[in-house]
Image (cartoon, rainbow, N blue to C red; front, side, top):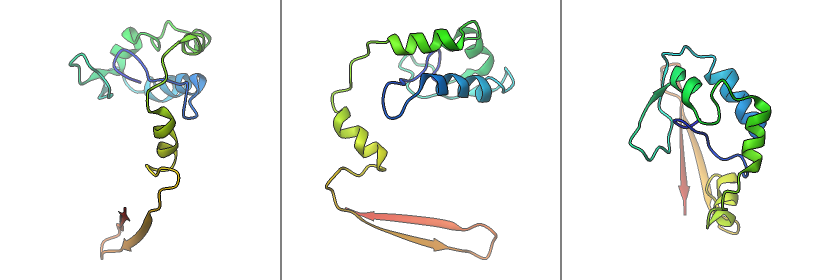
Amino acid sequence: MLIRGNGRTDFQGGSAEKLFDSVRMKLFALPDATIVYPGHDYNGRVSSTIGEEKKFNENLNLSTSREKFVEIMNGRKTPRPAKMDMALPANMKAGRIAGEERESTREVIAPSSSRASIIESFDA
């Protein structure tokens, strides 16, 4: 969910049905006064509330049915991002590009407290 909108569902394993269900069952189940800080707002807004999004979110407001949301999302003719063929495989592999060799090491440090810290380092 974004402020007054939502992200794309047409790539990277996206699903309009899953997005709708997740927002409605998880986020909209929170109290209306809950403040949320979604990303990707280019109009200067940094926060909203669950109650505001239930009323004013363009595609996810409470008057929009699941079927209508799926129809809207599947009907979008949004251009494919310029570097999608490079970014998508990298995103699916934690930033690693096909053919790029990286060595990774994982070190687990268990301090005397009950929490353990995990440090990962990657050598390019």
